Every structure is written in structure tokens, then in C-alpha cells.
Image 1 (cartoon, rainbow, N blue to C red):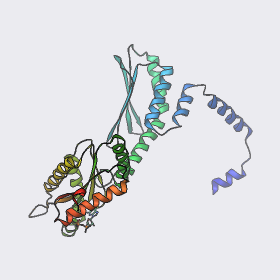
Image 2: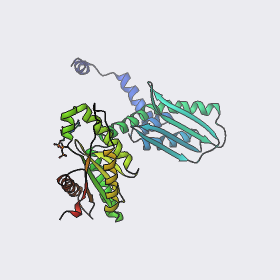
Image 3: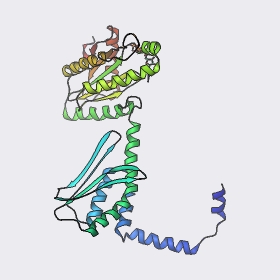
Image 4: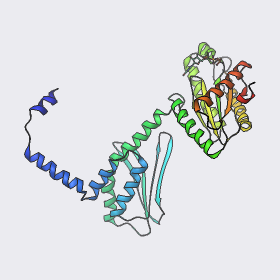
Length: 308
Ligand SMILES: Nc1nc2c(ncn2[C@@H]2O[C@H](COP(=O)(O)OP(=O)(O)OP(=O)(O)O)[C@@H](O)[C@H]2O)c(=O)[nH]1
């Protein structure tokens, strides 16, 4: 409120406005490379787009043969590369206020001069803030798709991936199979050993399932004690084998529970994607198969197609 009053009562300042007009003209005409670089970087939060701009703008002042950027953001490696190597190299570790924002490397066939090296440093000091924002944007996007307890994808991530997998499966006419896996009698574990132990078992289960599947497959926490595993390019027969491997992996969990270790089992429902099927319908069919597995005594797998 105080600031608003002072804004409303202040008189216009011609000198400041003239300076602003002049600055705007200079800015809009983009006369210097640093102004143009920062202006272009401010138009995007995509790290990939920013790196393309950085490569283009820096190479206009300091020619190089290739540029690489690498950084680990939210448990994932981000790598960007443009051009082809060269024996001479200069490398910068980018950091701001004690935080690391990746490594940027330039290669060239002939040596970089001292002037060029200080030119790089000037350009890099201009890119660090926008680059930090782009890295943080990826981390926030990643957090919105990650289950905080287990570190695997959450229900929202599953929805996105199911949609992508369905359209790929339709377009390529390739099989794609979904397994819903629910821990058995999990309420008893919580009731007998407490929620902290329950949480620990959920994290272990996520870890075990992740290790039981291929890199091209993915696992998500679908609900409380329910996991979804998406298997692209995988038919029902192969998915049954994976489901059995997952069940075995869950059975191998041992958590300290006093006299006897706490163990857990899981039931799996399997459904292959049908041509042009909506993702909701696909999930419903996998859930029905899971219901059958529970009804058949738990700690087993059932395929939707096998339901009469
Ligand atoms: N510790 C912990 N427990 C959870 C979490 N989310 C859900 N649960 C518990 O999971 C249990 C699920 O219970 P039910 O849906 O009755 O199923 P169940 O006991 O596993 O029995 P079946 O699925 O029929 O084999 C409930 O006790 C929930 O409180 C969580 O994040 N942490």
C-alpha cells in the first residue's frame, strides 16, 4: 500500500523517461551481442532452445567447431551437443550462488586466443541466470511428475505416458501392455508395523519393480499401494513373464520386523492395448484383471483376455 501511494503521487521524470526511451531503442535494435543474447534467452524456458541460441550467438563472435553441455537435473542426465569436435577445448563449470548448473565445453581445430577466452567468460556471465531458470523449470516440471515417497513417476506421469504409448502403439501397430500391481493385504502391514514401515516397504517395492523391468519399460505409483508398469513393444506372453518377475522381486523383500522379517506379496492385472482404445478403458481392463488376481487368492497374475 505504501509503494502504491508513492507511485500514484510521484511526478513524471522526463530525464528518466528519455533514458528509458533511449535504452529501449538500443535494446530493440539489438546493437550489441550481449543484449541480443539475453533478449533471445528471455523468450524461452526450454533448456534445449536456450542452448541452441547460446551456440548461435556465441559462434557469431567466437567461432568454434562444437559445443557440448551436460548436467544432471532431477535424477536425469541432460546432454546437448552441436557440431563436431576439434582437439582444442575450453570447458566451464557453470555455477551461481553456490549452485551448479552444468558444464559447457567448446572445441575447435585451432587454439582459442586469450581474447576469445575472456569473450567466452563475458558471454557466460550473461547466460547464467536464464540458464539457471531453465534448469529450475525442468526440475519443477519433473517434481510435478514424480511421487515424493518412492521417486518413481506419479499418476500424472502415467497418464501422459499412457497417452503417448497408446498413440505410438496405434500408429506403429505395435503391441503395448500395461501391468497393474497391487501389494497384498497392505493394510495389515500398516496396522501391525506402523506407517513408517509401510512407507519403507512401498519404497523398496518401487525399487524392486524398477530393477525387474527393462530400461525401455517404466513404472509409476498409481495409487497408495498400487503400481503401474508400462511395457512398450511387449505382447501379453512377454508381459506375463515380466509380471511373474515382478511378483518374485516383491516376494524377495525382507524388512526388519523384530523376530521375523516382514515380507510382502503382490497381485498383477495385465491388459494389452487394443487398437484405438482410450487410455481410461485400457486402465479399467487392467484393473479388472487385477481384481481377478485378488479374487483368485492374491500373489498371482491375471490377464484381462482370460476373463470369461
Ligand atoms: N504406509 C503407507 N500406507 C499407504 C499409503 N497409501 C496407502 N496406504 C495404505 O494401503 C492400505 C490399502 O488397504 P486396502 O485398500 O484395504 O488393501 P489391502 O489391505 O492391500 O488389501 P488387498 O489390496 O485387497 O490385498 C491402506 O491401509 C492404506 O492406508 C502410503 O503412502 N503409505
